[in-house]
Length: 215
Image 1 (cartoon, rainbow, N blue to C red):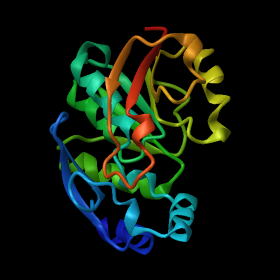
Image 2 (image 1 turned 180 degrees about the horizontal axis):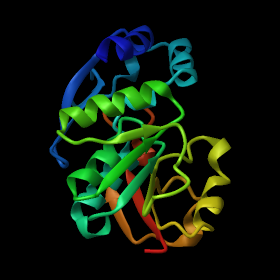
Image 3 (image 1 turned 90 degrees about the vertical axis):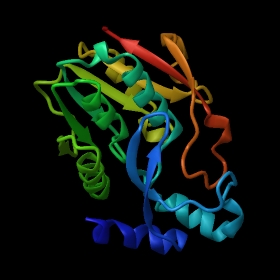
């Protein structure tokens, strides 16, 4: 699957994917090769390149701060997902769905509109010795818990919170404190998270709030 995933990131970033283990999760994922350790890599890109990157961002090639925080929250509280059928909305790399399975979920469906994200999720799941399903949409039936992380960066998703918090399906949502669309729901936990690799501009999203509904 790597040969299907790498062309896009190589075109945008000039480098491919590498296997990186997120230390707090003990979870290997195929992510964009980082620059120098401990340094932002945005200095390597011109303004024109940065604009092109954000217009064609392969979100699945990053471990986003909210996704890392939500995965950690699930692993810290495995009883929340134990023996449940999970749907991970906006799955990206599959980090949260994989964490749920590692924490004892009965099954997980990774949902993302990007076909490459679904490929990346399957690749990462296999690397973590778990099995999951993928879908472009949230299944209408058979889901005990919906997990959502880091989707409000896109203005098109700003009405999504109201819709999902109005449904009966239990929900766990992780989002940067910099995003205020969930403030009325009140967080149940806070985590510090960092997007990896950091290509610049992510520092304001390090503090993450965890929200719950119908749990």
